[in-house]
Image (cartoon, rainbow, N blue to C red; front, side, top):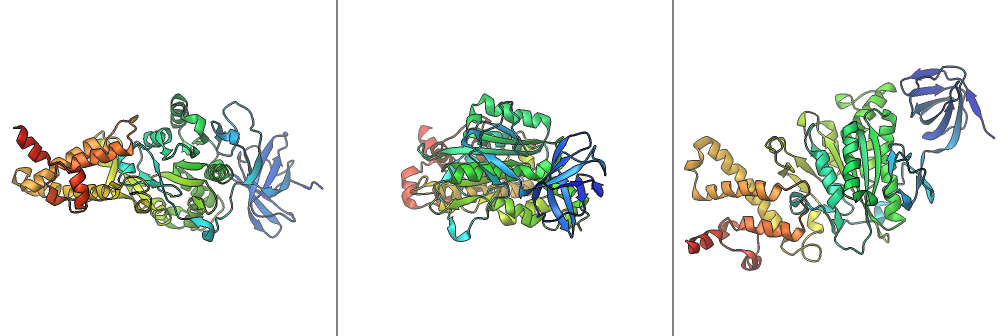
Length: 465
């Protein structure tokens, strides 16, 4: 039996309130028919006695308090899923927007997903290669990990995201790999950039795109990451694919959540964000992982722009508590025109130690990474000292570190937007840089590996003279 409720008792921004309802559940979908016959979709976000508050995806403009009807559908929002999604572009609410028509669904799933049983989780191993040296060597992305990128307004995080989509791969060609890209609150030119970049590079055929532009409703922005993660879980755990989910910009998502919370008259917390921001972000980030007995995996790279480059802002602060490390983009490097402007010292991947080295990448990967990090930290000390006493007064070793730091930034961290380095190329470049330093300074590397790889550049230069 179809029950329709006529008229509404309140309208507030994207929210609509219906009185006298019975048997309605939280998160249930509803169909709203306006007086002129338009059909809109809504979702129950609050129940108070016989009152139900709905968020209307298309907004409440044009809806009157009378002469409209609301029909509750008895189920949460579901996403149509199929292998056909690969190579397709969808709106933030999961509707096809590429002009290729609807997909034929193999199944439909609640976009809120199902919580992974902690006992069934498999510890993340193996890595996903991005072709970017500063990530692959220094902050390696492990399958099943959630590794955010902390950026700032106007920095090159969009170019970095596009490069990761083009170049990302798993170690074995026998394993199926795909990417789910979720864009939230994107400007029109940014959305067009991603679509054109993926199409021109032929990367789109392995990508599922969900795009929510800045002009789209904020309610759709809240749905976008949930639709993307539902598609990722389906491809990973039903079809055995290793799925990399890139979500940008999580700050736009959180601001939509704040605006939505304000319209519900909820008591705000830090900087006006809702008090449940932590649990809401956790409900998204914790959908990454691997399951025992399942061949696939879901790996997340959420990208967020830190307001005023403040890493203590609630969004990066809470994200850091939930995720396993971070990649931080450096404003000074970006202003110098360096790409990618990855700040090596504040970046880390907490799971990389268990997914690199012998049997995973290369035996010398962990010590080279550790030694490069230690050497670059000494570069900062040398630069600080040089700013006080002058570079000419530095000791010979400090001058070596100054030269090492310059080469490290210009040759190792910096690379072309289309430059795809293999891990072997990255590690050999790391060895080349370390050989600029005296062997006595390389205390993080085993002597056996030094015997195999170390070539004293100063000695070689002397013999040539």
